[in-house]
Length: 423
Ligand code: HAM
Image 1 (cartoon, rainbow, N blue to C red):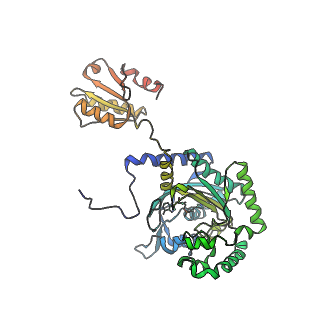
Image 2: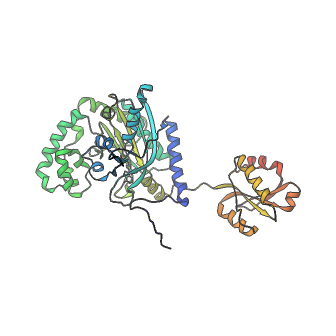
Image 3: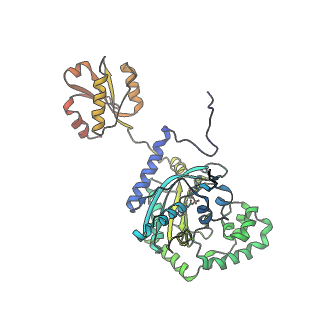
């Protein structure tokens, strides 16, 4: 039967047979967050549109063409969040969190929305994991934030990724660099794509990471930001590299990394997996030392990163790094005999109260049909309850995979299950 209603373009469902893969990523991210002492923050999926316009920047693709903006019933402009950093900073400023603690180390996970042309690894609703560290401009933290991303990917088993870093300087160094870029690109203006021609006046750095082949070719010989860093930014960048060396994190310096959002200052970085094709950036991040004050807070520095679940899954799948846990369920209860249902219900509830995940095919009467359901459930044990066993207060415990079974006194069931070595 053809479904009457279908998914919006660029979105997808995470079906039960796939959701375990998402859980692996979520768990690994949460574990890494606790290793680095980050706390979770949850913000709304929609915010005032002006928040993103101000922070992500009017010349960015996100604001120019990708934001899901809407008017509410009172004519106020809202937007589905295209990213998490602006919302986190808004929340930290609004709740004065930096007054309570001078540093905030926060992590988040959730859906983001960008109206872009969908393709492999690019969706209109996608899921990001990310962190933000607010309250320090020390270069050690640039390295620590990168180390977080690196350890997270490694914990999942990935090895074939590259880390590229750059410094895009501060407002002070940007001015001369922008001038140099305009001078360099102006004679080639006609050969640039339409977007880059606009960028030339508004934000020439963005031409450096344009993916259009003709722009890429022209950009090859463009001036390098690293030659325009003032002494403070140059020292900062050098220190970041020293810390990364100490942490033994491999990286390459790529002066073409500029990132697509306007709030960045100084360190910018990307983790890429070249096997992913056009959408190869697993994680992108950087420092944003002016964002907190631009959003009404104190003059406080910040740094963070975010990555998409979808691309990470593609990477993990292509390297065959995802394996389901051996068992989905501890116990499946099967009854053989009339009128045993109530005993089964009692037993199931007892097992659940003792923290064993348990299921039962309530509406299947025959043992055969119940055993089929047990097989499908991928449980570790089947508990068989028959009239005979019930009379003697016993129960049969069968290991589903090997078929090996023992009959136990019901009183000993929990201690048997707890002590069974291979659990
Ligand atoms: P971003 O580079 O726009 O940065 O996105 C970060 C990551 O989100 C990308 O590297 C990619 O893995 C994923 N992503 C972005 N757009 C899509 C899409 N349409 N479909 C699937 N995945 C996507 C930010 O969002 C910044 N807020 C990162 C940050 C945090 N910088 C500092 N703190």
